[in-house]
Image (tube, helix red, strand yellow):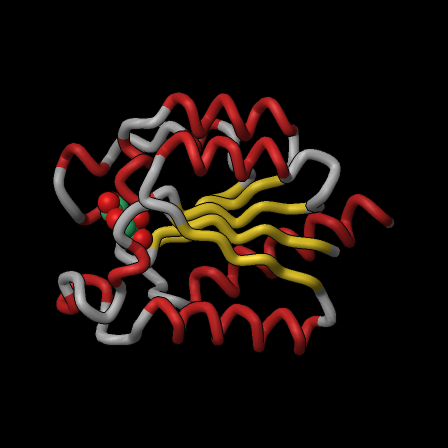
Length: 147
Ligand code: DQA
């Protein structure tokens, strides 16, 4: 199983940005957590971050036929980007949406998620562990479709 983890704008600033919302652990610590979990589960992950919408679209397109699942935290583009939704629909790869914070308890403008229409599930408010839960959801889905 090969999973692509995609992170949108400002997630590279974890540990610095709004620690009262996103915690004090850094982006590198998030990557280490995900990579260690992937090793434990015996799967391959690639982690990618960009602050640019088009670069994220390119990365999703490049995943076509190269990855079995996508974990995506589109960050602010969650609430604005039809392009990311269309990119996910274009490649047809199973995807799970993740948010570190509980977006349902935040501002009105964060209540819209464009990618949610495509994603098989959404994990919010679990901090960094949400990424691990999203990987588990993709693995469970794969096992279900094999049986
Ligand atoms: C976020 C929530 C978004 O509303 C915000 O723009 C982010 C991070 C989260 O992980 O909680 O940048 O996706």
